Length: 106
Image 1 (cartoon, rainbow, N blue to C red):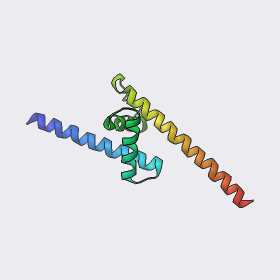
Image 2 (image 1 turned 90 degrees about the vertical axis):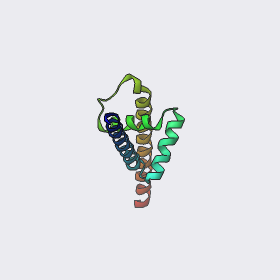
Image 3 (image 1 turned 90 degrees about the horizontal axis):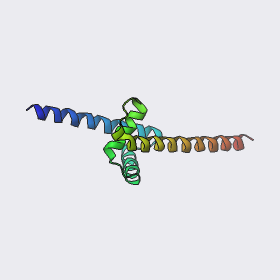
Image 4 (image 1 turned 30 degrees about the vertical axis):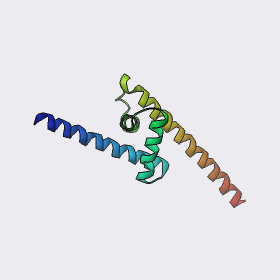
């Protein structure tokens, strides 16, 4: 009975982490939950990392930087570079939007 309770708590935590990771990706990419899930899967396959580990690392990077262990370092690194890539894409988008607004106003 005790093991079942632990398993249920771990499952609940995993679900919460997955939901939070999807929220993060949805916010950063401005996409639907299904698109965010597809992006998580694609990024995990590209970097040969389990989706659950990538989700944990992504949530840790956004919500709490202190939970970084050596066993999760590859996932954390992949999540970090993914966030940097997203940031670079969003800056490029902002620059092109600014350029477009400048042309329209001129």
